[in-house]
Image (cartoon, rainbow, N blue to C red; front, side):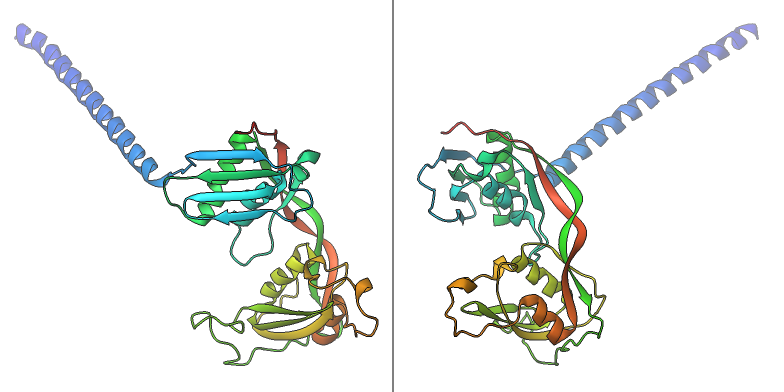
Length: 305
């Protein structure tokens, strides 16, 4: 009987030892399975493409030759006569912006040469990708590698324009049913949601069919070179047609010669601000608002190749 009692602890220790080994093997199996699953998911989610060849050369003949030129294909990015600011604007602003939005981030910081030294860039990829990726994430990698570019994003208060309802109330022309073809139909300048500009000297005629005030605000931002915030809280779809005379306050709408160079007999329309308020009861005025900025913290001139 005593021998049997002595065997019991031995059996208990044996079972406990096997249980510990089992738990250890199970834990190891869980860690291996988790690692394999994480690796599989990571390889599926993160697919970072890079250029296979990049050429960057300073171009001393670009002064006075006009704006930067950009050519995109599924495998190639080419930019000529481009300053660093041109490149940052492409890679961090226009390439990653939501389609149709003029509320784009502003760029701040950087040395003086970022606006005065011109470069020609050609970058090639063996794998075809989307234009948004090739001019966005892939071009960002080039700037970070070759220009040692470091950026951060900040939200600051700054100058904006606002749309508000005038004291005498809004007079918005509500869109008539069937006044414009829907976006799904064959494309046309009169397609719902489109906003067209027809210049004649310093005067411009704006025609919009089936648009919201948010869309109008985005459109005006491009001509005013500042964000335009719709603060009217007015819902609905509208048809607009109005004329105004472009001047120094609307630099993005300056398609024709400046006022000072126009024949004196040419009649001038109201300014954009006057036309909007007198015709539609909507006040367009300067104000303050929150603006997204891309801050350049560091950048260096690249070594040419």
